Length: 592
Image (tube, one colour):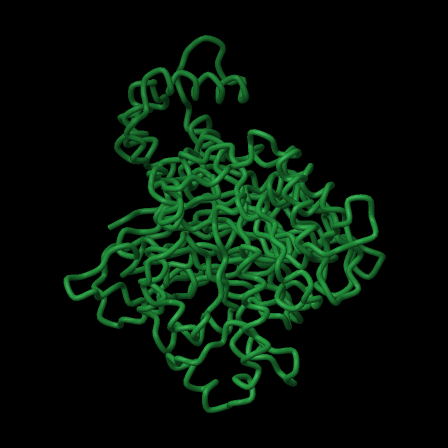
């Protein structure tokens, strides 16, 4: 007798649906037979051969095999003393995502290059719990971000009437503040729970020099030995993630530059009014756009999308002669602004290790007009890209344009959800979830005539072909109520597979719908020819078909360059990026 699901129809009679027993797909049975030599049991040496030859796990040892088999057999209670797998034991092993997941779980990139050689997991307005206009500010989203592996935390600093005189909030909005002290202590406590690599605190500073000195005291006393003090050698090149392990580093504008910029802005307010100059600045202009004047109706910073939020708060000129030397000497990554237009700021001029901030619109505009300059800039300096101000509900932009041009810090609202954020989660599942992903060599190289990688090229040759086979899905019956997807019958699942990357690699596929089954079996294969696999992301979304609107049933995003070949179990996540307890897909990845 099989077991059944019963669904009530019209409140009076039951519909009966047989629950299919989950067994291994035919491919799994065939592979088992191949490596067991047609025998009903697989010995440790044959299992080892399967792991090395079929799964590509070349570093596996006999001891590893013994540990895996011991665990699976203990869980399944199939055998007491003999280390052999039946086909069901073998299938059970394949479904263990902590040992047979789709990605490498160890840090394996070279971590000894300067910071600008890495994509860095970066938060935007890291203290906000919800929208950008009226949500609470709190240390809780900072803690959550650090636990997820985020390595760059942004704090907006404003004067307050509290004891330490400094609060963190989104300026000129209705957001309720949190104290700087709370934020710093939370960072100290949680900075390295997920990754030993450095945490960068980017400060949007709206403070007087005396309060900047107060910040210097607070960060020094809170972080102690964890705080990195810049060295003379850092002036021209950032240290490596490896050299900065367990260190907190600060990035903001030096106070002196802030005040000079302020005065300069007043002298040049006429620039903002000159529309022809604005146009030329976008196309590689030479006019100075470093500081927008508050006297115009629309500051140039708004038009160009440069991050000048922290530029107009010290109105009292009496502060002009003061300095905050303690504060200045703590800044490892000097933030700077385009002083003579965006293109001028992107040209390769030697100077202090610096970070330039652009909005998503400015980045897109620059990528369209002079993308090569962005790539060259990011070979030496750090580029931060932040969401446009109209994203009041804390949505995000597609991050790939920024990554394709080498931008290291793509700042995201981590409290939201949606496909862009899933891509961010996917990228930073790379390199053991360390929060630092080494940029592909081609983004750091120049040709003999200074030519650099062009992501818009349509003539790139196919470098690798990825075949993705999706066998089956399972776990929804354990994680969802019987009527979650449909009140009258079991769910009708299908899977969408997207390839995101450079334009010529983008593709979209989908499986057929499997009706009335909590454990859908698709057995469908898809082929993706890839020109730039190093920047490709495989997005997988399972949906439940509905006549009106399909229901979300799980998602994940996997960096193609990190995929482990072979038959792998792929755990799925909810809309916020939290892993489901049981929901998973069984898939095969094959590189040709």
